[in-house]
Image (spheres, rainbow, N blue to C red):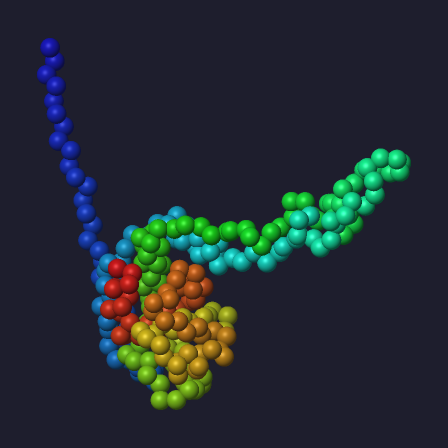
Amino acid sequence: MEATTKTKQTPPKQTKATELTAKVFGLTGQSVGNEKLDPTIFAVDINPDVVSQAIIAQQANSRVALAHTKTRSEVKGGGKKPWRQKGTGRARHGSIRSPLWSGGGVTFGPSKIRNFSVKINRKVRRAALRMVLTDKAKASKVIILESLEMSEIKAKQLTTLVGKLGLIKKSGKPAKVLLVSDKQNRKAYMSARNLANITYINVASLNVIDLMKHDHILLAQAALPKVKELYG
């Protein structure tokens, strides 16, 4: 009999998450230092299928059914039989609101009661968000703001900040910037809402589509712990 040899299986090596840093700037555009980013948020493995699943679910859940046609039961009128069943020589009909009649109901038309929602697990949605943040961080497109406390409502202050940070596309146009606050900040919101290239959002409302639609992420330093708490 041949002796059987058992091969010892070695467990796969676990790669350590690489640490990433992001530059910290003040509201006037001056460099303050560097901030170490949490590797569990900004240095995870990226799975494009998970990100795609989160995008499809978010788009489907934001879809609203507007087109609506009335069926024969919803169209007004038609309670009386148009003419008697026999003896007239014409085709028999029971209601003038039949789909066969002009002005009647519609068969198989669009209905406003359609439901386009897609279920996605919370873990999958959060994982997709971490993957997009990782992609932005690796491309050095995550910038930390020391504070978002503005002294007044002024859009020019934000446009000046974006210009000093050099957030400009190759075409020369200003890049799209997502301004992420740690709390409700009315002055920052009012200053950014009239700017086409800057979008204000609260950290609790972060989503995959907004992150991917913008070229750079301006993240308030105070929002980093909340990102870890909400999406970690």
